[in-house]
Image (cartoon, rainbow, N blue to C red; front, side, top):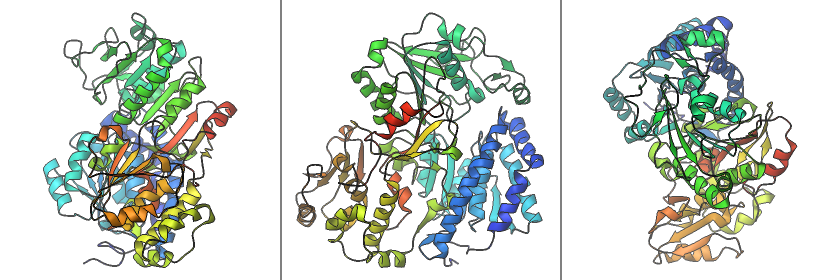
Length: 610
């Protein structure tokens, strides 16, 4: 039977015991086992760095979980406790699956079901065994963690039997789309063709390309797949980039030699005679391949080729590389394909233009003369918040919300308590967003109006420009506007859409400097909504209101949102991430005043105000 708390399990005092258990998992002896199992079963070359991230980043996420738990105790938030499915990733299972998804859920009383993998599955089961053993030591009930060794079809049947359960998955977009068919509450992290833009082909750039493309045998989510550069000199990839790549007999050898960018013998790979069509060898004997689109030709599609080193190259002359026309086209390609990361090794003004014109979670700037930026570098514990997002227009096909690291995982399946929102509907607005009262005054008092005020309180706190990170690199993070020059977000209404339906989606634009990037499309027959919008104070940057029955051509818009009445009230941070880019940008140099001066002043940062 369901109980208070929105799920089949109530809140219990598991947090302290789980935290003590977690300390054991991160002790030298047990952490070494976690690293060893992953090296043995998956051939992971650098499990040590993952454990380091687990130690540091989970400290941040524990604090966020504590804040979420406090909100529930105060009656503001309800954490749903339906069993959560954990779809394990092979390469980062210790940090992402064990610590982020499993421990953060069970410490707040959310039971989890760990799903087996069709390949590289053993190390996921091994950490499950270690966890269950430690749960017994600390007296935690066994029902909190279950391992489902099922076929894909059996997993789909299991998820269909729990329609209110979330699934936390890290993997390909194709698989995420299939899971979403049977699990509407899927929260998925998906990959993308990580890109590096270089204006010169220097030795430092060659090293950055080699490390980024070969990391973990191209088995890291941020591994480089797409290089944009001047035309490649003859055999440059073969000699300067991949010529020094070595092979290792095992991942143990990689650990011993600090060789995390070498090729592991024995992994599945194509030879010169069975490589992917259109690619050619980038090494005399190792399975490394590339294809070059000359004249600035961007690839229509890029296959991930997991754990196989493939590199797509877009080449054009140096003058074109930095031209507004080409960079606008490249930004459009990035928005369409949505890599995790873009790294730019070139002038500061080029880097700023590329960041402002795209909406990626990870952006790094470096110099062709060094230090050069890699595609595979992000430390969420330092403020370099991380995410693997699907393309904006396809977001709902793959996930319920974008996944951001660090965040408290149980929060993705939490919502505001209706009575809290109804009370909040009567509260005053923060001064910085008081100009929104003309919109809110038209709404009836109730949960939706309260959610709108919760949303505005969040924006008044979070949409105030960038925040500086705390690590060795120069980092900025925060909420951002949609990419500059990428087109507007269309909010498509129906004949029955009310202002109460539209207001929550409209406010992240209306209350901020993104208001001129919004177009509200209303059928001419919806006279009440048109009249309500006409009552808003006029301003030059007001959202456009277009009278039309839907969108004829979605290609000219950055995003298209179909307005429906709110049936649930998710945490406002996740709600805003459905509409606005989030992430970080950084210079690979520490204390980079030129970077801070240029990027902090950018109009791309989301800010409240008229």
